[in-house]
Image (cartoon, rainbow, N blue to C red; front, side):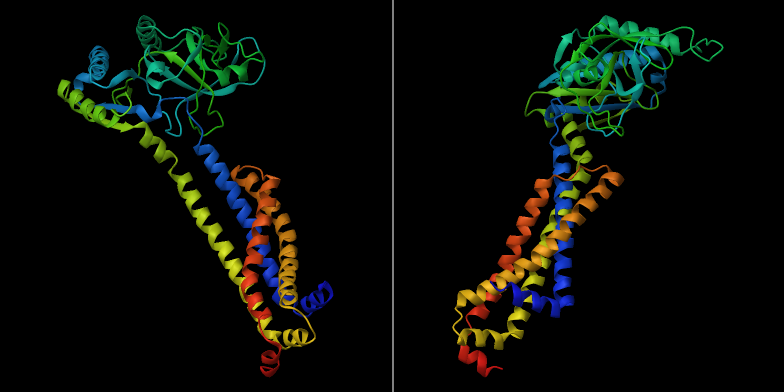
Length: 421
């Protein structure tokens, strides 16, 4: 093997080979971390919410008529809107809730199990009526759903409670406590209770208000600023306010979403034109939320291709220069009986050594860069198999880049090589 001559040549040309090795090291570090970020983004984008996202429509009714400032008028308008939307052909269910899947945020609060001394756990919290779960396509696996009577009673009770200042004790805690029935997600139940059995048990918030769990849904995912994407609490009441309007969700039969959205907007405005009506599919909301991740995947993919291409060009340039510089040596070796395969093997082995040195340093850089990214942007930890795959990729790219110029050098005839000196 030609290790001795190769190593001596490398010592005499440290800068040249050192720069190529450094380029390979940086390429490995950047490429595997880019792939790691792409995998993490794709993993997040592939998460299913547990809802019928493709057939859901968000409907927002924003009033400007002064009549909506009357509670009774607004409540009747909400009921009329729901009846009108449910009568549209192609509609499966409609609900009045401020919960909007894939909006990237929402409402949250902190609760814990009643009587426990543990820390408060943050969860998402939204109102729901008797149709919310059916509209979302969420599956109730334990307990019961809310009833219309329960929703109406809660509307009145909460309105009376919050329209007056709550009396508080000397510590500032409310004297009159709230007690509500709630439905939570299975993931939240497992977080709260070691046995996962949540039905009939109670939670409390920092004010001492209590919430009894009457139902558990199977699947819930909604992206949020805190890592509480799977933890949720629904409580029974309607949702509407004069400045922000009444939010609705509508579930349609497959293939009817766009037609239903157009029909709903016309029908609601025809029934009451003292407001603006806006519809948007949840699929479009999800697409908008994931837009940055989609862009990230595209940009990083292009960066990976460019880095590997530029590094391959560097290796090709180095090999071409080495072949040209050592034309006389090649001719001498060929004259002494060296075969073409011997010359080819020499340059491939030289490239393999340079590439391996760069990859050894690059592997350390890759892990160092990953530690930095995880600590700064909360990315995913590096999979060792990913680094191994990057090493194999650059090994193959290096050998492929070396093969053509090395083969041309091996094809030079001894006599021609000698005359060209």
